Length: 144
Picture (cartoon, rainbow, N blue to C red):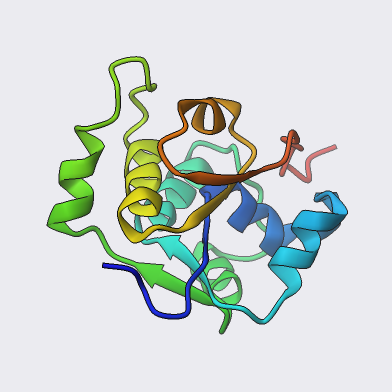
């Protein structure tokens, strides 16, 4: 059930940061993100982003729809939740944290055999999918 042409899946934070401040990434991650190679993004990341914005944890220069339009560039392919991915979320161990967004994202990477780009050490340490990890979580807020 692999997606033709896809190798990487973006976790929500790298997708947001890539659209807002790509300079914050280590060089190797910048190269991956800057390539024209298609990257996947779980559609559930859109909901997570909307919630972060509503809660005041994500300061955008424009509106949320404008951010989505600019963040969903030609090299980002939205991936929908499937029955196989939903079932895979239940295969994650009890030790894996309960964040439903992370569970879906990890399950998507596992089912579609994609490498997940993430700054989440818990996801890396779970070893449920291939991971391109970077130890970095900058603030996305532009407030003073």
